[in-house]
Amino acid sequence: MTLAYEVFVNDPPARNQGLLPNGEPKGGSPVASTLIYGSRDAVLTDPGFTTDQAHALGDWVAGKDRRVTDIFITHGHGDHWFAAGLLAERFGARVVATAGTIAKMHANVAARPILWDKTYRGIPPSPVTAVTVPGNRFSLEGHDLVIVDVGHADTDDNSVLHIPDLRLVVAGDVIYNGAHLYLAESLIAGGLGPWRGAIDRVEALGPRHIVAGHQNRRLDDDAGRTIAETRRHLDDADDLLMTENTAVDFFNAKIRKYPNHLARTVLWASASALYGVRERPGEDVGRILVDAWL
Ligand SMILES: [Zn+2]
Image (cartoon, rainbow, N blue to C red; front, side):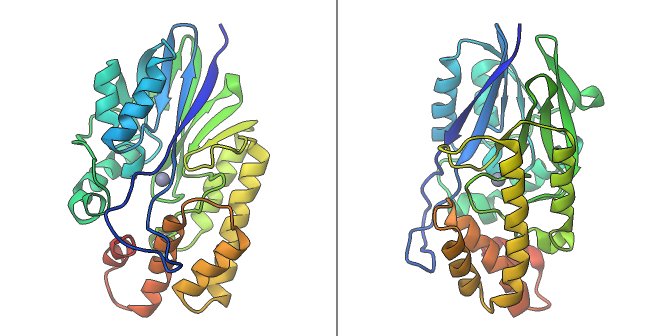
C-alpha cells in the first residue's frame, strides 16, 4: 500500500488587542497540519494551538477514517502544538518530537502567561507529553518516517519530517509558503546564517513536495519554489535591515514587496524585535522579543 498525504490549514485565532502600524487589527499566521496516511493508519503533524483549531482539525482528521498512531511536532513554538494534548486524547495517539524540540516545548509552556495567553484566547492546557523515538525514525504501515534535526531556523532546534516514499518533507517553520517569516529569533542565533543552513539541509533531502508550517492554502507545495522563496525572504530581510531606519519602514517596505503575503502580525513582531535591539541597547533580548508581540 502506498502512502498519501493531505494538508489542513487552520486560520489564526483572533487576537485580544492591538493594531498594526497600517491600522489593521493584529492577528496571527495560518498553521498547516499534515495527515500522512496508508490504508488503515495515519500520522498527523503540528496540530495547532487553540481548542477551536483542535476541533476543526480533529473533525477533518476523523473524516479520513484512519487510526492516528502518532502526532509529530516539528519545533517548540506553541502555535504548532499547544493543542496536541486534545488531539492525542481524541485519537489515542502518541506525541513525538526530538529532544531539542521537547526542551523548547517546556520553554514555550513557561512563556504562556507572559506571551501566549496574553495575546490569544482559547489555548487549552498544554502538558508536554511528547517522547523521542529511537534513531529519530518511526514508521507508518512499513514506510519510513525520518525526523531530521536541522538546527536553528525560526527558533532553535527545528526539525522536519522526511517521508522518502512520498518525496515529501513536512518542514515546519524552516520553509514558509506565502506567509511572512518570523525573523526575531535570529537575534539570539547571530543572524540568519543558521536558518540558511537549515534550508540547505532540507534541500539535500531531495524533496519534490514541501509542506510549510505557515502557508497560504491556495498555493501549491512545490519544493523548488518554496525553498527559493524562503531563501529570497531571508536575503530581503538582510537588505532591508541595511536600508530601512525604523521598524515601521521595514514593515512597510516588506508589504510593498509582498502585498499578498499573509501574517503581517508576524512581520510586525519580527520588525519590532529586530529594530528594538537597536533602539534599546543593553536591554534583555528575551524581553524585547516578547514585547514585540504585545
Ligand atoms: Zn510557527
